[in-house]
Image (cartoon, rainbow, N blue to C red; front, side, top):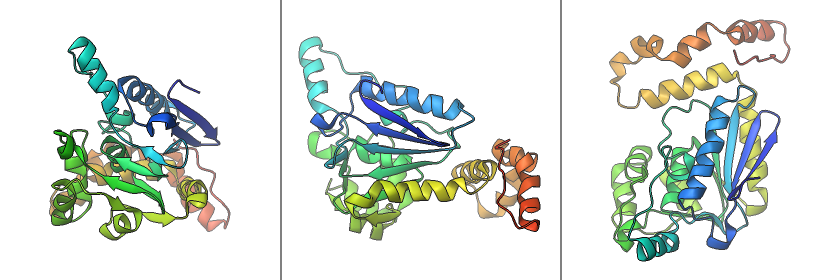
Length: 263
């Protein structure tokens, strides 16, 4: 366990918990750096294939930037806190992670907390979850990817309606808007997130990484060029040359569960 987070390994699943419940799991530079180190290790570990990130307690996933810490630092030193290389929560500026990450949002996800969730591939929300990018209300802007990601993940006018007001959105509305994958009761949140992880783990990790890499790198590619570009994506090429590509069809033909190697 780190100073600001908890880490649990369950087979090939990594579960990361932001552990600052006394400040609604808000993150300061030290917490962001610790989370960045955790996801660096996850990215580099061939034994870990899927991750879940959540917050400690039942009130907050993450309230975002620790503004009290920032204000105190500014008051005592006149300095502004630095941002870690991989961004808020160790995920917001991480554009090279091909392994899937699930956000299990167990309460408020505000500002940087929402930006952490938006940087994940799947968002499972408890019924009491609340989402917002309220930075303009405190003289800031959602600079950890929120402005770019939200406007790409839901219709533009809906995204602008959220961002230009800073209003709070319920889990149910987030599902209707399209940035929440599924809403479940609070007590079932982690079980649901783990079930989604289990379904991903039933697939070849080579195929999962190829899928994520191609999707994310193709978002701004014209449809007419997409199929021609697949062989330019390293994870797609790695998949086509992997043992898993042989094992999958063989297991299907033999009517048995595949034994994925991830290589």
